[in-house]
Amino acid sequence: MQKTNKCLKLNIKEVPLRKLGKARIRVLNSFDASAKKLTMTHVFLPAGEKLPFFKHNKTDEWIYIIEGSVNVTLNKQELCLKAGDCLYLRRKTWHSFLAGERGVKAISLYYPPINWKQQDVEIEYRVGE
Image 1 (cartoon, helix red, strand yellow):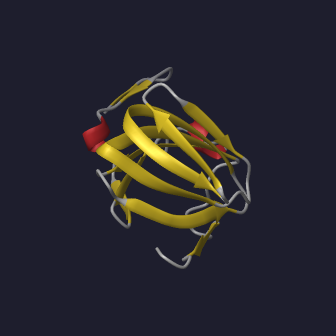
Image 2 (image 1 turned 90 degrees about the vertical axis):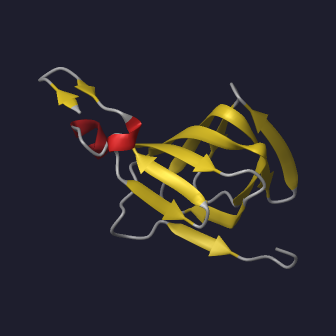
């Protein structure tokens, strides 16, 4: 990591890894003042892996797909996102992810920022999952 008074350069491998099931999450902006305004994460979900239905109660989420694809279920609506696609989710929106055959890498932004000490996520395991 290289830091000056005007910028911060880091390699993604330097960022601590968080795990959520099979998903691998790195909080990219935990090193600077922007963390007080939003949370930016790099997310990887391996091929064929699924995250159960969940919602963020206090944060809105923007997802930008960098590589691969993912099927997103929003209640009963199905969306397929591929590299270059972006999705906005309002807080309290139930959603689930199923990674495509090559997995998926994405950048997610959360506003307001995620408070990692107070759980913001509700998880719902639905029949057939």
